[in-house]
Length: 205
Image (cartoon, rainbow, N blue to C red; front, side):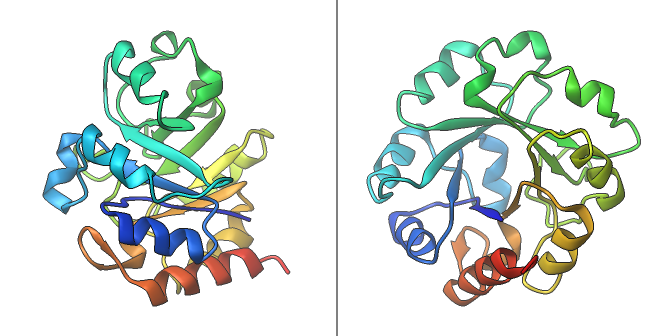
């Protein structure tokens, strides 16, 4: 099971989650993340990336950015996660993109599959927020998405208490967590990070 720790805001947390065994880290460059103390300007994100060793995938999280911006970001990040209202036509370089979807009453597999991207992240939909709410995704719909054979990344409200059940229910390619491993908004808790990664990676053993 692959694990992405999202919402990294500083070098110390970046190094810690890598040491704990994370497969990927996410840095949120969407200004709306200020309300949860997770926004990192691009220039600061570059500095955080200096703390990431080889073979850890770095993911820049954006919302409704123009193509020239995210192409620039790909100079530094391995992948870009698009968490806004981007259309399939907005993403001509799909092999470098993870597309995030709000799993609500409007979510359909047909709409998801219209995107030709590297991975598909399924999150909860709460109000106008584009993820990071700490609310649980609809696992039944996520399970249906997994059955398409696409690499599904399960996000939304995961924590040390429910990640094993989530993995055993949905069988995703990877899990993504931010709120569930925080000491407080914007700061990761080392115990929770290590415990989450351990439980996720052993959930199917």
